[in-house]
Length: 232
Image 1 (cartoon, rainbow, N blue to C red):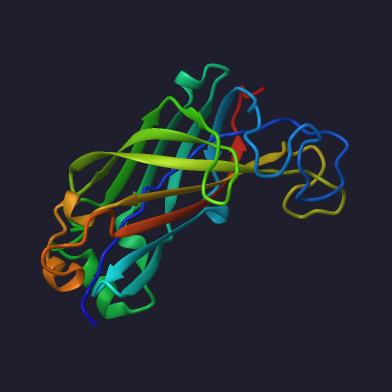
Image 2: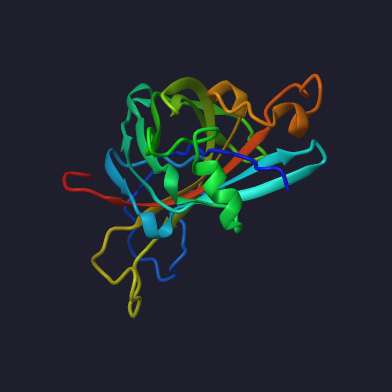
C-alpha cells in the first residue's frame, strides 16, 4: 500500500458555562440545547490530552482512504465575551501519528512527509470566531480562520466547530467529583490539501493526473478542556 499522509490541525476551541444542580455526567446546561452554540464563560481552558481525539482521513488512489490519528495534543482555549478575542493555541506531536501500520507510520514520520526530526510539532493558532447558521449535520456552530503550520509552512485553515455540551460533576464520579468545574467539550472539523504543506510525494499516484480539485485530507477533532485559575 502506498504511503500516505495526513495532518490534523488540530486543533480547536472553546466553551464553558458553570452548571449547578445537574446529576447526569453528560448533562447540558438548562439554557443550552445539544448541538447549539452556547455562550461560553470567559477565561482560559487547558485541553485535556486524555480526553482529546484527533483523527484524519486521507485519500488513497482517489477511491480509497487511509485513516489515522495523533495521540499527543496539547494547548489552550481562550474564551471572551467578544467573539473577536476568542483564541486557540494548539500543538500536536507529529511523531505521535498512528495509522495502525508501523511501516507506514515510520514513512509518515520521515522527510517526505512530517519530517519529525526537523519539525517535531505542528501548530494551530487563531483568534476571532464567527457564527454560522448550520454546520455539517445542520447544527449551529462557529468558524475560526486560524493558521496551521506543518513542516514550517503556514496556511490559513478554517476550523468549524460545535458545542455538544458540558460534562458536569455528580456524586460518585471518579472523573468529575462534586466541586470540580464542569468540563466543556466540542467537536471540530477541517480539511486541507497535503500538497500545500510540501507533502507531494506519491501525489500523482494517490490523487491522479491532474490531481482532483479540493481537499484530500479531512480532519475530525473531539476535545474536553479544564478551566484554569481565573476562569469565571
